[in-house]
Each structure stands twice: as structure tokens, then as C-alpha cells.
Image (cartoon, rainbow, N blue to C red; front, side, top):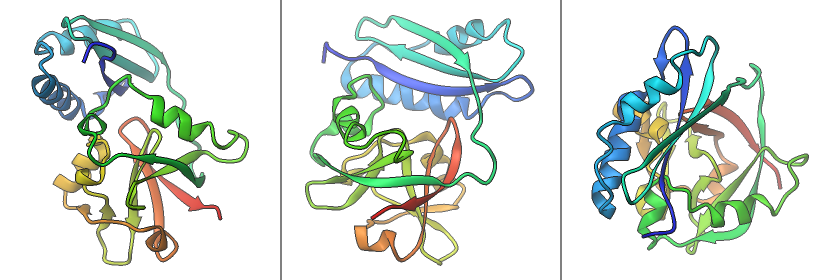
Length: 208
């Protein structure tokens, strides 16, 4: 538990402030309790300080280490052009559904970086990861959502071995998404979306 930090990536807008701030802070505190990290009581203040002079949208990255140290960095945020559809492929790299750390967002990114490196960025926009049972889990930086025609998006359960994404949590709470296992075959029978709190829902197309 000494070789990584907890991580949150948020979007800040001049008018709206931090998008889904409450959910991000709740996930950070929950993860810290589960692995014995100090409670990040001053996370909100650190975030506010980091964007105090900002006038345009920012991508904001916060880390919390095992000593309770919080670091915040920001960079300009460029939204994805409207009408964009991401090209997606499935990685050979597999996730281990028994790995509880996959349920938290951390700087331990090795398995995701390995999966992303399987395809050149010129060929795909995101890479999907399956677990050891061949169940769809998540993308390297996104949660998976499937429109199967039921009127509610389907997203894989945490028990498959995946991050409890903030956008995912929000959509489930709003009853716009429900938890359900997704097979590779399912992906060809519905409409695929990838999404995270930073960028929202993005239509995607699975390449064979």
C-alpha cells in the first residue's frame, strides 16, 4: 500500500465550478477509509485554491498519498467535438476481478497502460478491458455503458473488477443506468458508450 496514491480527475468550469464535486470527494474519502489512508479533509480547499485564478475550463488532477499529502495540478480542458464517435478495440490484457484496488481510482496504472499500448493512438480512441472470465469491465480511462434497447443504459457490476466511476455512480443514482453483466457478444447487439466524469458520455464503435 506504499507505492501508489489515490487519484481524482475533475473538470472545472468558470460558471459551474467543479463538475460532480460531491461525488468525487465522497469516492476519495471512501477509498481512503478502505485502505487506511488519512481522511482528505482539506481536499475541497486545495481544489478551490488550484483554480482560484482560472478563467477557462480546466482539467484538474488531485492525488492523496498514504501520508495524507494532497497535490493538485491543472491543465486546460478541451471538450470532445460534438458528434464525435470513438473507435474502440478489445485488449488482450485481462483484469483480475479479485483485485479490490481496481474498484478505486489510483496512480497504479500499469494494467491500463499495458492495454492501451496494444494499439496505436492513431487507430483507436479507447481500449476495452475484459476480466479473466471474458466479461466486459471498463476502458483504460472510461466506464462502459450499453444501450440495449431497454431505455436504461447497462453498465458492468463492480464485482467484475472495475472502477466505481463517478459518472457511472451518478447515472445509476438517476436511474439512467442499471448494473448488469455485459458480454462481448452484447456489444454487437446494442449501442456502446464510453464515459467518465471529465468528458461525459461518448458514443463508441467497436472495431473487429
